[in-house]
Length: 295
Image (cartoon, rainbow, N blue to C red; front, side, top):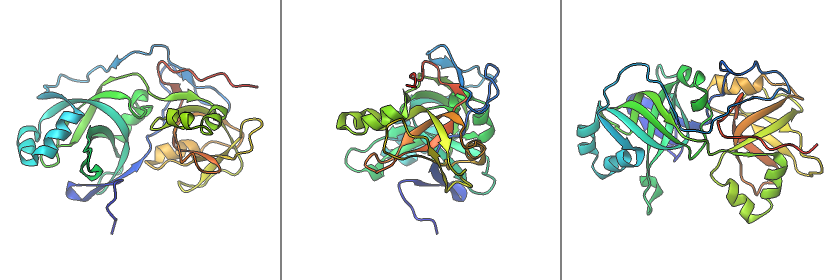
């Protein structure tokens, strides 16, 4: 039996959602083939990008993720009658990716948007889950490199029972990235101070790392990272858990390779500094630039 926790979500028909990271970016038409020690392509315009629709779609409702989740929490039956099986264009802050597990769901991932937040009881919180195929995410570098807090507009069909889950989703607009471009040296320095910890709290980091040591064999392993000059700490990068493409992209790297990743920081109180839920970045998100490394 799978225990129910705040990181586990049950859906109709026996599906279970398990938290994870997002899939890795792949080369686009304006990027180069990745090689060891090769920098990713940098995009130029930090603008809100509107996706080109694949077909004319009649949208029934335009609303925020907070509005939809709030109506569902307030009166589930009324919300189902109003929004069930309707096409909704929804805008909200990206929280994280969830991998769908269940019959026939090996190739689907949900983008989770910040929805209703109960100030008194966090167990009453309700997020919006927007389902994409892994193939969709694989071929969209903007979706691949979403960072926590980034505003995105998506279009999908609300489930008739759990209307906070949208199926057959398509991206409409993607706002500027909220990731923090940084270095391992800056992270180490910042985490030694309370104000520095607050800077990275709830944020993703965009950082260049050099791999070393034994290659991890599976999702339970981790890469050891070359520490900044003069540092006495150890640095690690945990393997991501979402789908084979995300994991494979990092397992294919070799000791000595220098790569750019989008990741989260683990508990800064630990003796070692560890980044988790890393995604290999081959196209730098628009508007971001990695700081110069000190030689």
